[in-house]
Length: 85
Image 1 (cartoon, rainbow, N blue to C red):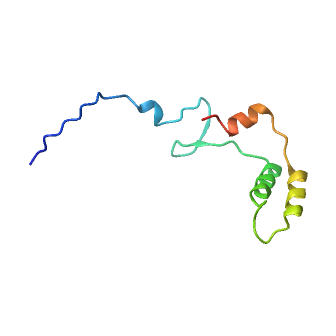
Image 2: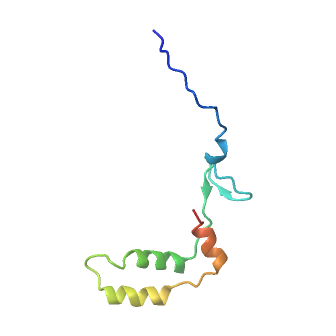
Image 3: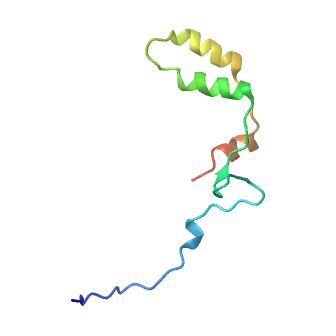
């Protein structure tokens, strides 16, 4: 049994939206892009920053530790970490 529906739209080449192709980026064994490694200090800062509103922790202490471990980043580093949509 066959159906009588035919798709009226034109075929489009959408292969450009399927893969993020970076020149010279790090790749794993499956071909996925890997972010470059971060420093221990940046790792500690990110963990603390994510824990600012975590129940059971002193918020003032976490804020003080975040200020202590904060890593200064350039505008270019922030751009690569948070690309525009």
